[in-house]
Amino acid sequence: YAVSAERIRQLEKNAMQKIRTAMADE
Image (cartoon, rainbow, N blue to C red; front, side, top):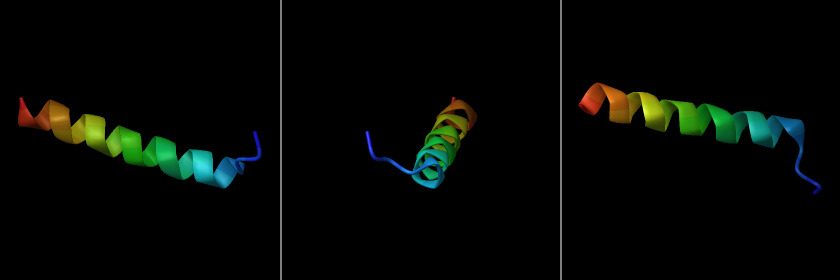
């Protein structure tokens, strides 16, 4: 588990944006 916190933060940000886009699509 050698993932940097910064990379995790970026992935979370990406996921949040995807969820937000999906919600706005409905």
